[in-house]
Length: 427
Image 1 (cartoon, one colour):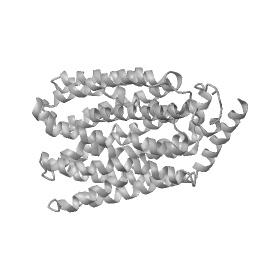
Image 2 (cartoon, helix red, strand yellow):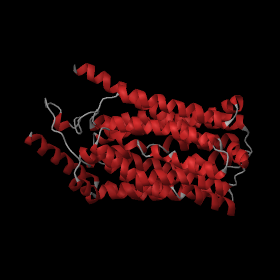
Image 3 (tube, one colour):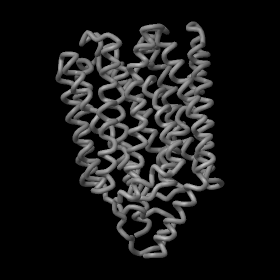
């Protein structure tokens, strides 16, 4: 039975991987479609910034709501609902033909973008603390791979099958298929089951959402540093997602084939960086509670350095630019899986979705303004200057926030383990 359960939990990982892969494809390919959509709808760069900020704003507002619902009700059913919403709103986005219509329907796609806390907390109840970094790293491979698939769909497939609207119909339909698969194929797990203190227990106590425990989230100093780095850390990701392809095309003179052959290897390296970060974080965490934070701080520092070197490379030095972008891609994602695992290293199981949702809420508070801020800086100067300023400043701030977390993580982590031990004794 134990071996069967072990196999099943990896089946769940596979299902969630494809959910994230296809959802990220649907979400991120809009960056590759910037020129096509802008030309079709007659958009300028400021309107493009508003379109991307709209979806981020909706996701931001809904994070606390999704987090609360995940801690109160079945996460599997809510994830199935999120996938259904993804498919439906993407179809609506493909139908409209005006800036106003596209703005509203694109904003509606942000409803399901805030659905990930339930997925991560459910995985935390399948896998213990020493494995979570690797598993989250595997799942987060889906983000850059989705970016790559979206790029291929946008640059190669879309022109062959009638344009960007046809691609939206395809990815929207896949969302409906995944909704059915999650609803019937993924089982809910008792919250906290994978915590080491409950490993040999025949029956698990049901931990229910508690406002008292939810308030405790904000009393943990590590969470404040996680919140601060999250606010700053999403600026570069959103700038790169929504503007980097336009930068390559308009300011570096790359055509569609050049973009694909330059960025595809970079994105594959980025994907490997997610798993590498999670694996390194687990390895370091087994030796010290500070391990995940140390890996994260190194990642943002070196990511900022190599991004600066890439963007300041002369346009004609394409090989040098490619090498620096590859090095950037190695270090950019090192912190991602470790931040999620760190949240669960210091919070109790029944409020983890809420804790993760609040972290994403604060993250998106910064992300909402990122596209517009980039657009205004680009209009005043150029896209290279906008990307350079935002990436280097934001990652520099993240590095200092991680230094703060290094001094608080030991106490908060020990407090959680003591609390779990007390609960285990009481059962």
